Amino acid sequence: MSVPVWLWAATIAALIALVLVDLLVVDRRPHRVGAAEAARWVVFYVGCATAFGIGVWIFGGGAQAAGFATGYLTEYSLSVDNLFIFMIIMANFAVPAVHQHRVLLIGIVMALVMRGFFIAVGAQAVQRFSWVFWLFGGILIYTAVKFAVSGQNEPDYDANGGVVRLVRRVFPVTDDYHGARLTVRQNGRRLLTPMFIVVIAIGGADLVFAVDSIPAIFGITQDAYLVFAANAFALMGLRQLYFLLGGLTEKLVYLPYGLAVILGFIGVKLMLHALHENELPFINGGRHVTAVPEINNWVSLGVLVAVLAITTAASLLTTRQAAGRPN
Image (cartoon, rainbow, N blue to C red):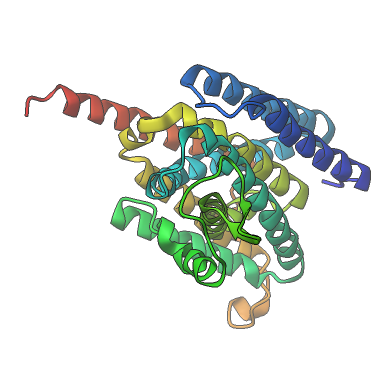
């Protein structure tokens, strides 16, 4: 899909506006975000993504709209699993409930910037080097196997613990929180607060998760604009989903297996696409392999929705039966 520069600029400006709305409306007065408030904002952000998808359908066509929808749902479903790690970070650092929204907002803005860079690099790579599809497909299939074997998202919150420890070693950090401030001045010295460390941990964790999500969405669409938009809408809605789901994430016991199926499916799709684009001399003499089928975006969207629906229903049924069982 050909995207003019002005549309890129307008999209980024709209995302900045959403962040400002969050800061000026939701975070105007630090408070504990309740389920009802979180639900309203989740509906708002899903509505924004839906409106964007309709726009893609009108101006880019059905196939592009299906690609965006599939990419958005994939990123959002992977984000649900990431909420486990965010909850662990918040608990380990004892982040006050009234400031958790601010922490997530800053961390996700950092993640948007970092993912924007990776998407730009990835888009150039997939356009110039067909072997990148093999690399991305291999990463996804490997991750899918880890999900299936371990039954959980393998990268844990301590994956960026080395960075957190380095920050503590190099910079002085206060013992207590000072509201939502990242730094304070005490006795003539500028000190970091634990809030700064938490933000680093959240941003670092999301960077680790990008190893799964960026190859996954490039397996659905190679359009850099749609890849960025799907990531942005999924991340922007993640904060409110964190407060809405709360303990519900623990009830989604089969989610890792559902994600394993999704990532494995997208990995296979990438491998098939890699055969069509093949330039490796040891495969079919470096010629394209056109005899294998390619999976279109509509099939991908159908598989994704079916897997998520079955996984969610089976998880809730299992946890409900377990809760009804006598000890």
